[in-house]
Length: 70
Image (cartoon, rainbow, N blue to C red):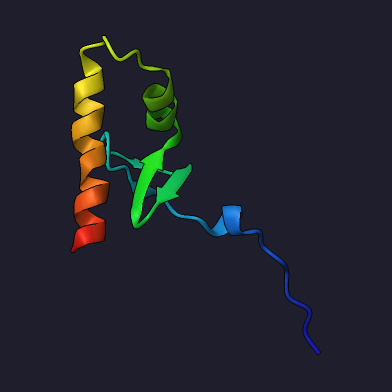
């Protein structure tokens, strides 16, 4: 009988396309069917509402709503 090596899910994970920055990244979170990389997640939660980038993040996050309606 052969004994296989156990691999964690993190080791098998491939890079995914971030819905915010449109770059492929190895780590991040999934919301519905979309992926947000760790760097963009950090920017999302730390960006002040007066920051010029805030509206950009809101526009990108609206894609989540549109996807769930489809």
